[in-house]
Image (cartoon, rainbow, N blue to C red):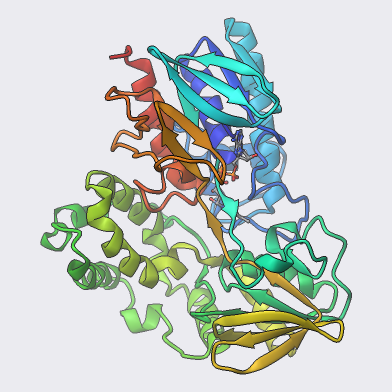
Length: 466
Ligand SMILES: Cc1cc2nc3c(=O)[nH]c(=O)nc-3n(C[C@H](O)[C@H](O)[C@H](O)COP(=O)(O)OP(=O)(O)OC[C@H]3O[C@@H](n4cnc5c(N)ncnc54)[C@H](O)[C@@H]3O)c2cc1C
């Protein structure tokens, strides 16, 4: 259910592995688009390098090979326009549709949304928004994320002047040369600034942290040098996920970052207080090739997910909240091209970045006034919220999984092998992949994190039902 990047990867690997005879894909939109890749705007780049974006679990270079097949001279570390990844998903889906038909596997895309999954004996019945019912032996949940609106903008969500960042590509452009507030300062805010700058808007980016993502030029070291962090798994400071251990964990990580002939940590990172000066310094560090931390990103994601999957979520969630606060801007770093665009906008007076918390938004004299928690006020022509995404709302009640907000029940538990507990005391064949598994694995917001999960689920699907 759900065929953004994650669901497309599931379908492609299911067909290629021969693990299913009939596959019903429920996706109301286009295959492979999802929240991340539906924009056709060539200015919107992937935040991750092409060599980390394969859909195929057994072929990590598949996306790079695909781009080369189109005649594009792309290097593995390049961050390509996002629409190319959507096109890759669609083409790989079409490839496996032919393969499925040759192998006698029935593969069908239903443009419909699933609203519930009910346990029915050893199998399941899916109910959709249009009222259709579909039986299944196993269900794989890949519903991705929903945009999150902060309370301060909720009363104005239907107003044309208050726009989610995800809609900027499709709404009629905000007035040229207007003054725009972007709430949030992470990757979606970076996209928003880039889009708004084309209409000459002057933008204030504001968030409680007031920090932009760091800057990367690749995700894998060249030449490959994987295994630096592998020792992490055996370190004494990884023994427990008590919140008190978070500082020791970060200290250990820092030791790994500085070792192995890498530059001293003070040469890899900038701690400048001013976000624009920090951006300037991090661009310079990346240009000199001193941001060696970037080479550990993928290994860190894989190890952390693997390790925390084995701990009960209640044991690591406080711990993780602290660690995430420190590492998030590096895990979710922006590509150099975007960093340079932002710096040039800041230098020309079109962008300012502030650390502040919104208190109240109201409309006065045809403009928006944002009152901040420090009591000050600013005036804007439009407000864009780029305040992040949340995993989809899922509830478990009476052996059924209910999807969508305003439903009743308990959020379902997800086991270490990614099975979703419907409260029936059985080893369900309902699996959560990508953001649907976020309560169990913390770093699932990237294509690179999905492949190990897809492999894990494929392995269990091939095993006979308990
Ligand atoms: C703006 C943005 C940019 C990003 N850029 C990158 C990047 O460059 N690199 C990277 O690795 N990651 C990126 N990500 C993270 C990205 O979300 C994941 O990497 C990846 O796309 C996985 O998405 P997904 O398929 O799990 O979810 P989504 O893309 O959210 O797709 C979920 C799909 O499920 C469908 N769906 C939802 N509910 C139901 C239902 N009840 N029934 C049926 N279908 C349903 C939706 O229609 C949607 O198509 C980005 C994310 C965002 C939001």
